[in-house]
Length: 280
Image (cartoon, rainbow, N blue to C red; front, side, top):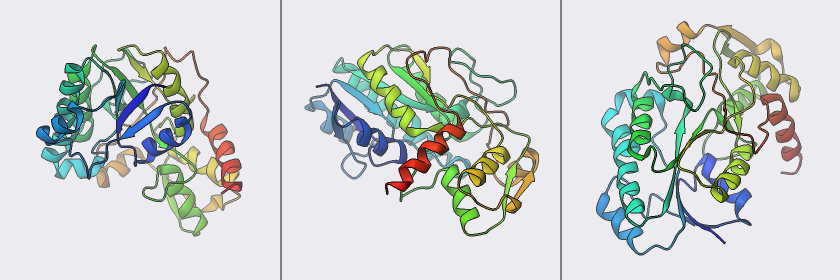
C-alpha cells in the first residue's frame, strides 16, 4: 500500500480526501501543530527519517482578502513553505503533488486549460503561482476551483455559506455577470486516487464539469433544498470587488487531460450532497 505524507489533512479538502481514500492508501498526516512548514529546520527534522512514497501538499494560506493585508505571511506559507518541503522531498527522491488554484488566472479571457498562461492579479494568486514555479516539471501540480462538500464544521465553502443564509431567511446578493467553476470535493478525491497510482510530473485541472455565475449557483441551491429564491438578489463583479478585491471575473477553468474520471456539474454535485445529508 502506498504511503502518502500530507499537509492540510485537517482542512476542508484534505480531510475529505483522507476520509474517502483511507482504504486505498496509508496516510501520514503532518499537522501544523507538529510541523510549521515555514520553519525549514522543523521540516527537515520531521521529514528526514519519515518513510513515505508520495508527498501531497495541501496546506496553504487561502484568505484572498487577508493576503492583501498580510502579503509577507501569504508568501511565507505558499511560496517558502512549499520550497522548504519540496527541497527535502526532492532530495529523498520521492514524488511530490502540489495543490494550486484557479485564481492564478486573471479571469479575463477564458476558458483556461492546463497549458493556459497564468497571470495572477493579487497577492494570494501570486503566492500560489510562486509555489507552482518552484515545483514545475519536477512534481505534479493539481489546480482546483471552488471546492465544496456536504459538511465541514471548521470552515464554510461558498455552497454552505449560500445555503446557510437562505435557511436563515437572510437576503443573499450574488454576482450575475461572472463565472466560477464549482468542484465537488469527492470528485477531487477520486481523481487523486487515479493520479497517485499513475503519477506524472504534469499539471492537471481537477474541476467541475461546467462554469456558472454565482447568482445561478444560488438559484440552483434554493431549488435543490426548497429554499426561498426571492431572497436572492443580483450584483455585478465590479461592485463586488470594491469590497472584496482579488476575485477573477470569468473563472471558467477546464481540463484537456482528465479523461479518467467524470466530474460533476454543480447541479449533479448538489444532488449527491442532498443524498449524503440524508445519512448524517
